[in-house]
Amino acid sequence: MTLLSRYKKKDCRYIVDYSSNPEYSNYWIQGDKAVRPLSQDVQYKRDRGYIGVGICDVLAASKQMDLKKDGVSIGNHKITLIVEHKPTKSNFWHCEMVLYGEHITDKSDQKYVKRLLDITSKTVVENVGGEMLAQLKAAMRLPNEMKEYSLLGSFYKI
Image (cartoon, rainbow, N blue to C red; front, side, top):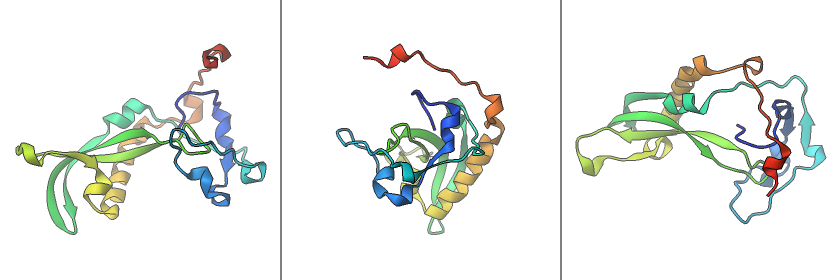
């Protein structure tokens, strides 16, 4: 995902071989040094495609369900997607869509909002994730349906 930079739509054609250096995909923490991929670790694929989806559409996707852990009900939850900025050492603009579960209960001491993976199993998360992506299908846009906006270079100068 791209948030804001001098990134062009065609830049998605550059593919980093993350297996060649684990540092490329390590999460960046403020103060860490960035890692620029070596040219031999980057491939240009002219026919690489992509889809776009609006952040508002991601945030609007939700479903209610009775969650289970180890086959036992842990209660009714509202499942939502959150977009988290998770920069890596080689890609500051890296974001992830993360599933969250909000426990729906009348008991205030039992209410919570947590990452779904912290509440239930990986299998449940994968199944729910597939259902949430299906909800987003109608909002997905092909490249020819998206407009590229460029900011003036002076915007980036401090």
